[in-house]
Length: 89
Image 1 (tube, rainbow, N blue to C red):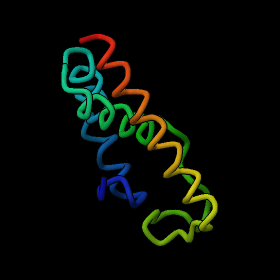
Image 2 (image 1 turned 60 degrees about the vertical axis):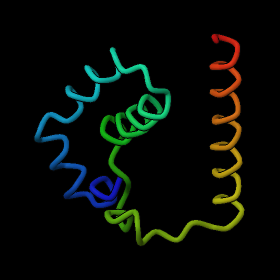
Image 3 (image 1 turned 45 degrees about the vertical axis):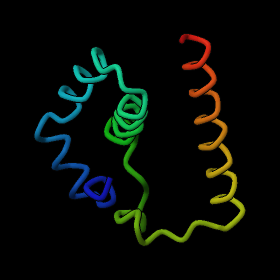
């Protein structure tokens, strides 16, 4: 994830064809945690580049309420994924 924090890092990953590799990995990977990581990284690589002042995402100040909401959504996503796994088993 550290490589995607900066504009230069995101561009390097795009230039090296990382998206193509991740897309292929995602098509056959069975490990749910790896799939989630691939999906999130793919979204970063194919998404629009953040606006001015956000070139380094590690330096962006996120309001506490937004950070809490994002954490809540991550936890909800994790619970849903685990429930799907249990139902499939």
